[in-house]
Amino acid sequence: MLNITTHVAIPDTEIELHAIRAQGAGGQNVNKVSTAIHLRFDINASSLPEIYKERLGQLKDRRISSDGVIIIKAQRYRSQEKNREDALARLQALIKSSAITPKKRTATKPTKASVKRRIESKTQRGQLKTLRSKIDD
Image (tube, rainbow, N blue to C red):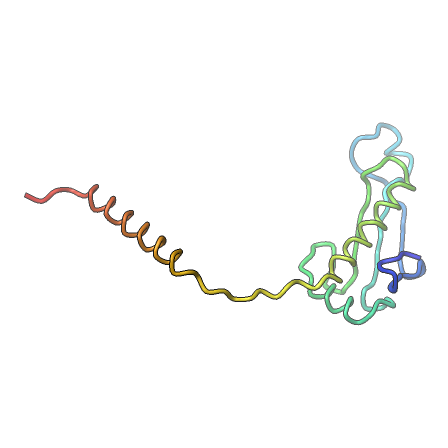
C-alpha cells in the first residue's frame, strides 16, 4: 500500500514495477545487474478519487503519457531496493502535488502613490532620451 494522504492509498496491485538495466557509471555491475526500476501507474484504471484523476490529467508533466499513464524511471542509486523506494516516493510526491488546490488570486488596485511614482519615472526616462538626441540649429 502506498499512502498518499490519511484517507487515500494506492494498492500495490495497481502499480507495475519492472527491474531494468541502468545507464551510466557502475562498471561491470551495470552490464550484469538490473538495478533501475521502471514504474507504470494507470491513472484512469486506478482507485484514486475522481478529483485526483482530473487534476493529474490536467497536469502538464512529461512523466504522464497521453493515455493517462504515469511512467517513472528510477536509476539514481546502485541498489534495486533503493531505486524502488525512490520511484514510489516520486509517484507519491506527484500525486500529492496534484491534490493541492492553488489559491485564487484576488485582484488589487495599485495605490495612488505607486501610480504617481511609475509615471514620474517614465517621464524622467523620456526626458533622458530626448537629451540624447541631436540638437537642431
